[in-house]
Length: 86
Image 1 (cartoon, helix red, strand yellow):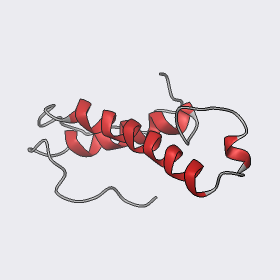
Image 2 (cartoon, one colour; image 1 turned 30 degrees about the horizontal axis):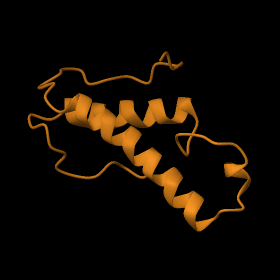
Image 3 (tube, one colour; image 1 turned 180 degrees about the vertical axis):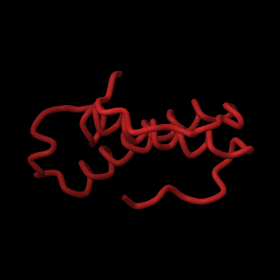
C-alpha cells in the first residue's frame, strides 16, 4: 500500500532477513488486538461492523513498515529491543 508522506528509511540496509516476518507479526498482532478488544469490550462502537484488524488499513501498514524498518537497521533478523511507544 502507498502511505504518504514517506517517513524515511535506513541510510544503509544491513540485512533483509526477518523484515517480512516483522511486518507479518505486526499485522498478526493487530488482528489479535482486535479479537482481544472484542472479547473484553463487546459493546464498543469499534465492533459495530465485522473487521479483520483493530486499526485502520493505513495504521496497520505504518505499524508493519515500522517493524520492518527496525529489523533493516540491524545486522540481526531479531529485534534486540522493543519498538518505541510513539
